[in-house]
Image 1 (tube, one colour):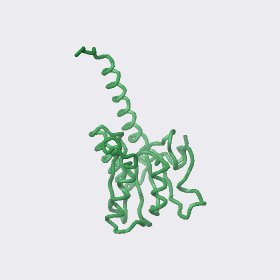
Image 2 (cartoon, rainbow, N blue to C red):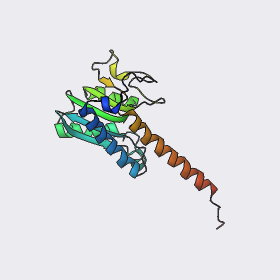
Image 3 (cartoon, rainbow, N blue to C red):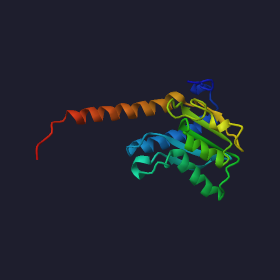
Image 4 (cartoon, helix red, strand yellow):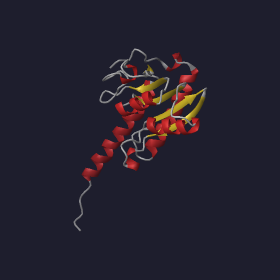
Length: 175
C-alpha cells in the first residue's frame, strides 16, 4: 500500500478536511440505505457543485458509483462535460471506471481517503489518472482522512458479516 500522502488530520489543510467531510457525509447516506459507504463531492471555485454516494445495489446499475453520480451532477451544474478547474473528493480510491470518467471530464485533482487494494487505480494497482498516454492527467492525493474513511468501510462490512452470520443461525421453519 502506497501511503506517502497519508497525513494526520491536524496536518491537513482546512479545505481538504471540509470537503472530505462532505464526501464522508455522502458515504453515510449510502450506508443508511444499505449501500457500501462511499461518497464523493466535486468542488469548483471553493463550492460543491456535485454530490454522490453509491447506489449500485438500489439501482442495480453497475455505473452508479459515488464519483460517477457526483461528476454527472457537476456537469449538469456547470452546463459542461468539462470540469477543468474542479477537484473531486472521494472516500475510497477510484476504480478504473471512475478514473476514466475523471480523465474524460478533465477533473483537475482527486483527493481520496482509503486505499483500495483490490481495485484502486489512483496508485495502488496502477495509476490511470497520471498515465501520460492519455490526453489529460489528474492530480492525485491519497490518504486524506484515511482512518475515518477506512473505518466507514470496515464497520459496514463487519456489520454485514454479522447479519449474514446471524441469518444463517436462524432455524428454518417448514411451511
